[in-house]
Image 1 (cartoon, rainbow, N blue to C red):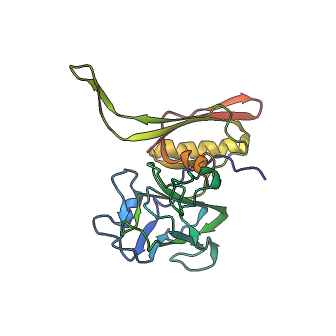
Image 2 (cartoon, helix red, strand yellow):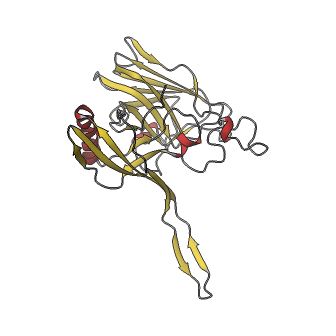
Image 3 (tube, rainbow, N blue to C red):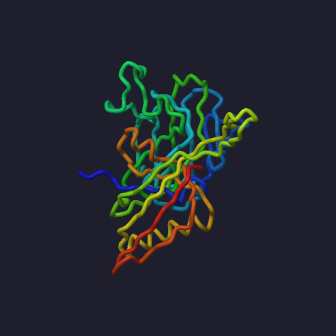
Length: 283
């Protein structure tokens, strides 16, 4: 079985949901903050009790294939459960249930730094980038959902979530072309002292990914165009995973909350085929 192709979660139904939580999050860091794309906004619990998050769409039915929570602080022992119902307010038929799954996968054997990594090291141990948890699943339709988080061993004493995405993801039939690039960009301010030393005023770093989707048939071109239009109309952020479901550092390094760095055009490169070039920067 071949690995999945690049997956992009653009039409985020989390932003249109009515989101509530039990227990309630801190008043200064409410659960509604997960709808805000700015890094300075996040939701934070008051403690480490089992956390329930409810999403409702007022009777509207939506399509779902993924859940992502980014810029989180969950520990290597944390579990997440995601459920979707056909009816509103968590009623009707339960159409999806992930069960309790590890929120942060353990490091793969090939990624372990033997003698250095602690026992039970997670995929994000020693990682200075944004921690995330993602579930991918077969398409279902629903009007409400529920996220259950358990992390009683979290040394922070609270659970933190920066951004939440859920909805239907785009995955092309043919994967990215050879030649994709990833880079670590920064806004560091550099200047020289009178003595000639280089002085650096540190700023935040961010990743940048460039790739081409060279093989889009008519149906996929239409899907891609609709996804691109959502980004363009709303200047929104999205979640992208270039190597999904690998559960290793390769997947981690090439997954992020992103925004477009340039306009995407669709090129009719030969008969009945289209191509697009993507440039995404970490948000």
